[in-house]
Picture 1 (cartoon, helix red, strand yellow):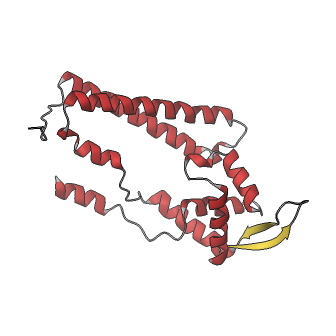
Picture 2 (picture 1 turned 180 degrees about the vertical axis):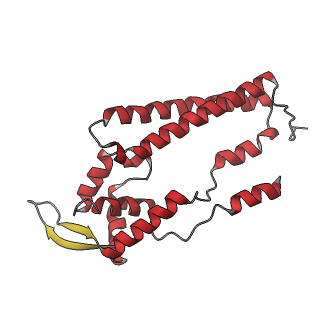
Picture 3 (picture 1 turned 45 degrees about the vertical axis):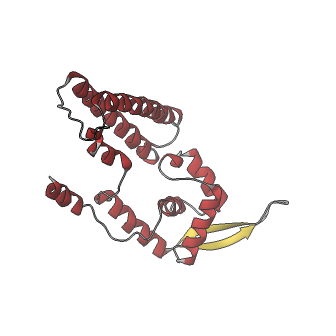
Length: 204
């Protein structure tokens, strides 16, 4: 079993990343038009990109500065409105377009090797009594149901946006719904004894 797992996870590898998730989102926006960071933040927020990246104004400004340092974006001028701070407008460079295509292609084609806590918890769930595991999983299902409903509500609210800029929300909703279905079946197997359960970590 361990060798099978090692073989599976061995294929989940990729080249070192040159862009953060927020960097990818920022560069992708600049392929549409020139923008200043605050406008970028507003656009990303309106599209609910916060469902897939941690979106904060300060982080976005820092990210744009890093992109500029790497030559992936460049300033096209600054402007000031009233007493507001100066705003620098940026555009994507040829190098930025190249790295964006490379990073997107890699992310779309190759599953990332990540280490979420839940699969580990599943692999060691046999250390808990079956009833406790079923109860914990029911709690998880309830959370996932709320998240899925929230994501579906976002899609229903943003019908004026092209579907192509919302497919990540579709993906997240679908993945949660798939997990709900699988967990529901698993809980039923635990409850009915279909899944043989033997606790390997007793208090004694």
